[in-house]
Picture 1 (cartoon, rainbow, N blue to C red):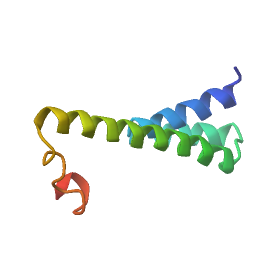
Picture 2 (picture 1 turned 60 degrees about the vertical axis):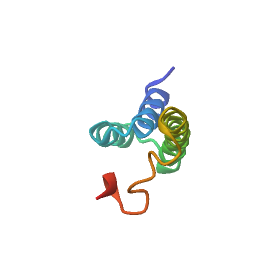
Picture 3 (picture 1 turned 90 degrees about the vertical axis):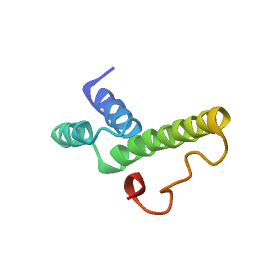
Length: 82
């Protein structure tokens, strides 16, 4: 696997796990390696798709354990319900 592929995987994984410092680092590495922004965006899109799927499954498990009214607060009010 070449360095470009490793960085595309790393930036997608960074998006999947919500790691802002990693996103910044790997974006700089992608730029340093000359990776086209369209490829970077595609990798981040995959990571965000994984993130949304994991969040939905976590919400399902929490609600199955604690009831359907758990995990709803703050959905429309921004970060962390603030």
